Amino acid sequence: MLQNIKSVLIGMTEEGDEVSAAALSYGLSLAQQAGAHATIQAASLKVVVGNTFVSSVASSLVADHNRRLNALASSLAERARGDAQAQGVSCSVETLQLSYGQLVDTFVAQARVHDIAVLNAQRASVDADRGLIEALLFDSGRPLIVVPPAWDSFKHRRVLIAWDASARAARAVNDAMPILRSAEAVEVVAIATEKQLAKTVPGAEIAPHLARHGVHVNVKDLVVQEGGIEATLREQASLFGADLLVMGAFNHSLMQEWVLGGVTQSLLKDSSIPLLMSY
Image 1 (spheres, rainbow, N blue to C red):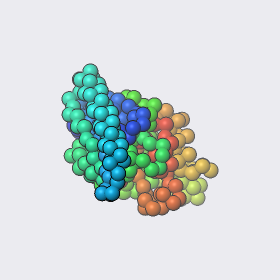
Image 2 (cartoon, helix red, strand yellow):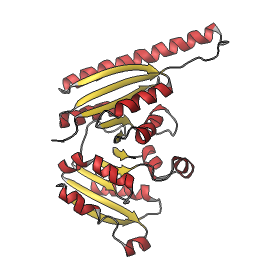
Image 3 (cartoon, helix red, strand yellow):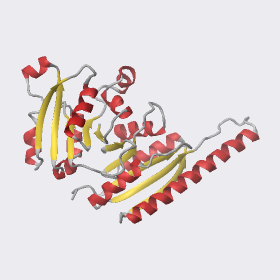
Image 4 (tube, helix red, strand yellow):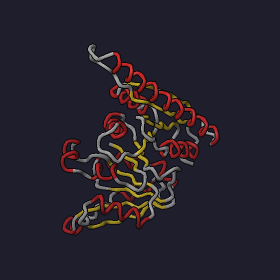
């Protein structure tokens, strides 16, 4: 039983292209296993015409586009209700059509009153869901699970923790504690250069804390590979057979992440397993 997870927010945005069902399936599976309530927000982006001189033809096209997206979001909401009922999950479903700024504000406000949020992973660096991911991480004060397309159910038999002793990593570990306590195996990975590892054992300080919470944990210190920390994490997740990666998000400023890449951006773009992140 996943104790202390009582409410799960599942967010899906309809933009006219094919919407991945991973977040819905994964979020409902998490809620079912935790005995939690699921709030499902099926939102569509509303195109707003601000220029009063736009032709009536253009305005009509925009109105048609908005109606189509709203219909798709409504269809998605009905599917969500059916899936929740089939799995015996208590849920509430909201169908929203809002401008981008309103949509972000609504999702963030909802996330603040839930234990955890679930969103689809997005490969592109600029789209609605990627903006939602960053807004929820920075502004909600709650953990977020980002789900790649291939994952349709919540699994936490083997959980990998990316540990760098930062405040964000500590917050992610604390936020993930209900999941860690019920996992069969948890591995803490600290990645550093050979010189850094010769002076300290980066992951040793977190292991006693986790053990006191009843987490069966193993610590592994790894030398960073040529492909960087993200490549090292991907390889270790595969070797460990991880179902979930727990990590702090954006340890550099967001501007540095955009300019330099960064571990968070790289894993958001290409991770084969779900990411539980906190900021």
